[in-house]
Image 1 (cartoon, rainbow, N blue to C red):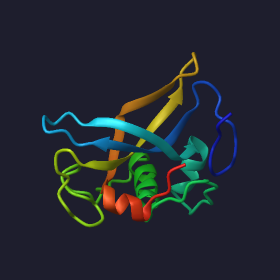
Image 2 (image 1 turned 30 degrees about the vertical axis):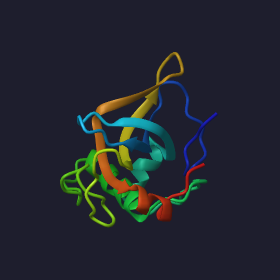
Image 3 (image 1 turned 120 degrees about the vertical axis):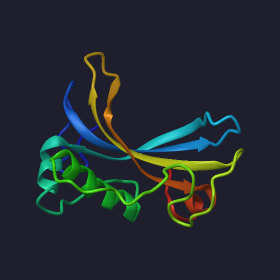
Image 4 (image 1 turned 135 degrees about the horizontal axis):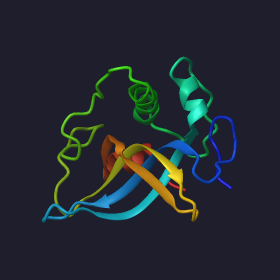
Length: 150
């Protein structure tokens, strides 16, 4: 059973948690990008997310996080708690957040999102879409150099 990457508490059905997702996508010429694969390098329970508003917490994740993911997590929990801060990413999806190259049609890239999710009564994962934020877009070249995929 999957649990919190900070306190290791198992998620029960309908427990809310914060999740960072990496989606490897193919940019299409018609603007409807295709998801090729995905992975969740971070899941944090609401209790630990609340702690993260006031202090740095230890993250026990198997997949190394990018600095932008760590910074994005702390921004996001503060944002959810009502602390007004804007995220530094501008024009999400048009340029790589690391090298600033344009994401062209027929190129693969990784979109990094953070959201609040919960396990539905049937065990399926249900994102709370109104809380989803794009943290970064990473071109394939930068992705190969900076990210681990398991």
